[in-house]
Image (cartoon, rainbow, N blue to C red; front, side, top):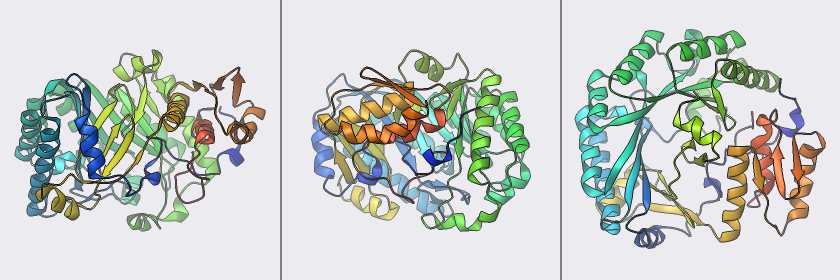
Length: 440
């Protein structure tokens, strides 16, 4: 069992899918910075694309994604036209430079689009960018998945997919607004495998209303039986003041912090017992999966999609709210779909906020990334070491981490504390309540 020190988990901390985090973005960074960054991309530079579809056919009550209801065909068509405008704008700035080796379609739900729309979207990307046999992945809502959409995924060469499952327990599904019978997940899994998906991820959650360990066991057992290659298991973050849709969830039915910790520990132990290799603090993969190999070989990275084996230093985000990443720069597109359409239809790049990353900031980012990916990091000289050491001391005193010369090592059984330990190196803010999710 993991050691339990609730006082060290009480402070909400970022998930650190970037450093600095999106909470530190400002309007001081915008379209001109994006144009300059694109102009510096070299002919042979590896590029990854993330394409955001901010729509779902049905909105789950727990969801924190930037998504809205796909209840009008015209709404989706207008968004798709704006997205294709942005694709042309960005590709025009690149002028053939860069080699796209990964394309991730996320959301919301990409399968909120019709199969024909999805094919047209991918065709526009293939025509605009230089594709270098890219690995293509798609996030899927199994409730609205059709065989025709899976056929479209196969036609563009999709080899990775992620299913939003969360839980297999019907009574919990009804409490979070995501009813999907097990037969629906089984059918989606079969279709995706037949279509050539080699790496299939299931998203699961703990900390859900009325959830018991038996419910978590059932979800894990079904997931393993269906042969998921990757599993992400997240703790539900209940922040109804920030996400009004969560007000439909009965807060009195949510497990307390002690139960959440027990669920996280239990889920980790069960998955490890089923031969899934832990990847970071909340992902798991079968030993032969590329993610597991990257973790074993020290090649694991972290970006806005979570843990990844993608080693490209340039990630271009396309679509409303999508985030682009360059070595010295992070930029986010306009979040509101309507204002996003206004930007791209007028021929303007859509980046509205971001942050520049000087060498010192990038050095801290590397420390945080390696701590989360490898549970260890080499520490360069830092000007505020006294403050960092003060933050680290409670973790060091309890044996959750240790210093070996200039190397910080997190104990193998201290996974729940990895984010809190990494936060010791974050000098952008004093982390206060309400801004981020709990560490467990």
